[in-house]
Image 1 (tube, one colour):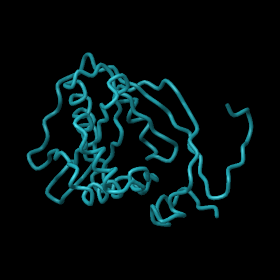
Image 2 (cartoon, rainbow, N blue to C red; image 1 turned 90 degrees about the horizontal axis):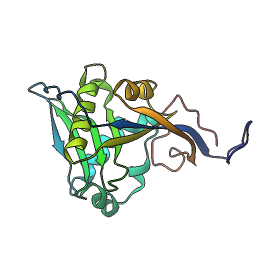
Image 3 (tube, rainbow, N blue to C red; image 1 turned 60 degrees about the horizontal axis):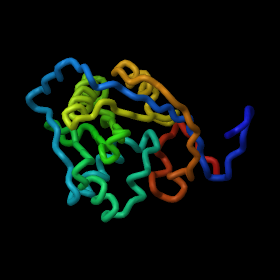
Length: 197
């Protein structure tokens, strides 16, 4: 456990305060109806390129990098697992968002990744996508759903999860190598987080 005060990081590393939240799924309102031109498409193990493009489009600005460091075999194993549900939110202009439910551990099902591309934010799609997420989790017999968000995520992410019925229950500090320094993400990603070399 870290003591109080400031703690130096190794050169080229970042640290993020992470908040863990949980939502009870026993009583849910009916899901909203999607607009006719919008829907969900399940991403399968043979769609690594599409998945990576969408993952980057949604998450580069927020320093999402974990899936980008996996090779195609490891990525296909995850998104092809029957208890791992990865969906692209699609519209007339292409992929608009990403929703991933990880139910491989039935005792701690997780909303693993969730977000919209920049052009889809502010249209009400996030609220609808979240309703879809909790209903899909509930339909698998899941009683609660966990999610975590960190200080590098979109500024409104934590408040959005709380408005969506998730309750914070734990915090941690995550440290990791800056993914912009090894080429996992472009150097211009997440301009709000300065690169220190």
